[in-house]
Image (cartoon, rainbow, N blue to C red; front, side):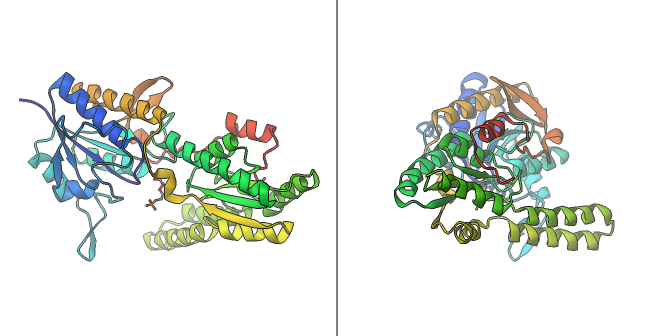
Length: 373
Ligand code: F6P
């Protein structure tokens, strides 16, 4: 009897998801004679048993399409809204997995999805994951698909902002996605020639940023581009968050922990994503007009780049092979020009931040880019 495989896409959509669905599907059908179905809207579709067949017709013509033909959601199997309540729906998911006679479930997503997939592995399901997110912050893989496309969009935006900033002698602060990791802001900032790059990994001092802009003015450069990750944080904010994190490590009681976690969330909200305030402060200190552009979801939209199509196709076809070999419980990771398998337990909780000795950071400093420190 042919094997039966389920696919779902979860978390924020990413260019390249359809290319990966197509690659898994085509390789599995052509090489291994497998039947494929796709669950709609992430783990919610699996919980509600909503699926579509992914035969060769459904897999045609989707390589270049952005988004995901399956739809997505940020639902967690163990914390799902059902009516007015939040419930653990793991049992329903396990039941639907068996009801569909699945041999394996493929979950494509970022860090949260890897965690949810591992949760299902611990409940006895055969799962394989692919790493996708425009943030490029999934641990244990060199790359995630979606990043290259988003990077191209962000660089294109910085290029366009340059000419208008130059003409009006302004500061333009451009907010780039990346709440925990600054890969997109750093990559776009370096390749777009931003004068200041602010990333979550390097808490910034507003006076240092302002001084670097004033120094440009003194050199006769009347405009500046500031590329800021949505998760960039001031030194002061970071200090407060670190203190609370220490407190969290020290308490043992569940109630106290929950309280501190709430405080942490509130501080995170308060001190990150303050791009408009940042621009206002720069205007006040430098007396130069400052404007803000928030790229937002533009960065996730549209057709995948050639590099993402290739990466998603490589990962998808490797996934089909690993499923045939029954290598369940793993993420298909990128290692140089190869793919390898990383056990999901080693992926969970491993956020990939920019290391302080990363070549992109070193080069940015060497060309005189201000990093706010
Ligand atoms: O998927 C990653 C990401 O695009 C982050 O860069 C961003 O912080 C977040 O998703 C936005 O999420 P949503 O689309 O749910 O608003």
